[in-house]
Length: 375
Ligand SMILES: Cc1cc2nc3c(=O)[nH]c(=O)nc-3n(C[C@H](O)[C@H](O)[C@H](O)COP(=O)(O)OP(=O)(O)OC[C@H]3O[C@@H](n4cnc5c(N)ncnc54)[C@H](O)[C@@H]3O)c2cc1C
Image (cartoon, rainbow, N blue to C red; front, side):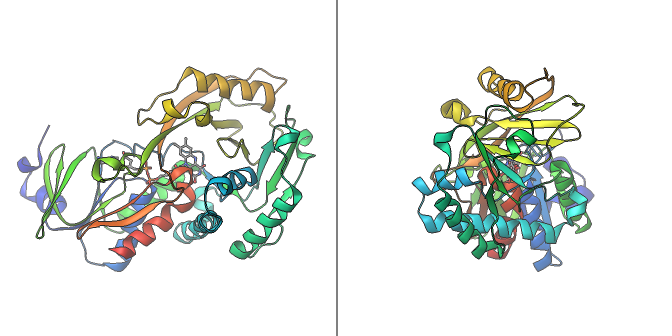
């Protein structure tokens, strides 16, 4: 493999010398960060290094839900997280979606405000109407929209589901095309004269008062400022193990002739989710069935979660047909004790924007905006 010190004059000068900002990671956050850096620093040299031949974390593997909180997820969060923090995160998610749409027009990423449904399995999980009133009041303060959440029990029959008791609709949530999103960000980055170098792994970052050097798989790179956007893989650069990797597994069915529903759906506090895409069903989740095994940064599908998803598909979502699966895959998220991203200065020249949880589609571009403005 050709190391950086063996490159030509042209190559070194264009890509590796006098870098003002080096961003590690080409997911939603890394790409968005460089776009906002460019808005502020018109003449800066900005380079992204990405270890994979494609972004290799979550941004090209996710479900494409543009969501800010299902009722059972909010209820669950409020049991363990202080109330003001829960609503701060909802606000960040909602604001993040507006930021995303100001960066990329909705039609370019096939955004559809299709609504979402939180499916409740049995009567004991039904939420108190006062709780729905309470989340509507708080959501109104954030979104300016009244009655965002409503109970819609008849949708269970209308959609042809089996084994659910009732459903709560969120009329403001939607879906988008995951890869169009990354493609649009990538196109913008290239047109902003930012270099994206795929296949370079950052091994370590060394810092002294004059210089920041990054040891990579191809040799050393020096940069003025370094921004870590490696999400679930960020611990190697941070001191306190603030980010845990969390694997999320997904399947997509073969095309199905008549799907009765259109929208985005959450089950079990958002741990399981499904939607339709191109006459198929994308179904993912189940990490809560085995938290310890899924606390992993290894891309892999496990029998336990595959069978859980297959059973759900065949028994509850499309109960009267045997549905075949076309693709299984997994992605790695970054989570932590607090359901909030870490956007901070690590030292004078190093910054990070990581730990997006299952919310990076919604908050990724806002995190990039905040991070670029912190530098
Ligand atoms: C299956 C799945 C479904 C999801 N569904 C949704 C959803 O519907 N809605 C939603 O809002 N969110 C969802 N998420 C979460 C969302 O995808 C993430 O929060 C978001 O993509 C994180 O973006 P990021 O840029 O921070 O991280 P990533 O996309 O993980 O990007 C980090 C990049 O850093 C690179 N990298 C890591 N270490 C190094 C290194 N040492 N050197 C160089 N490069 C490195 C990685 O290869 C990677 O490309 C889902 C996630 C998964 C896995």
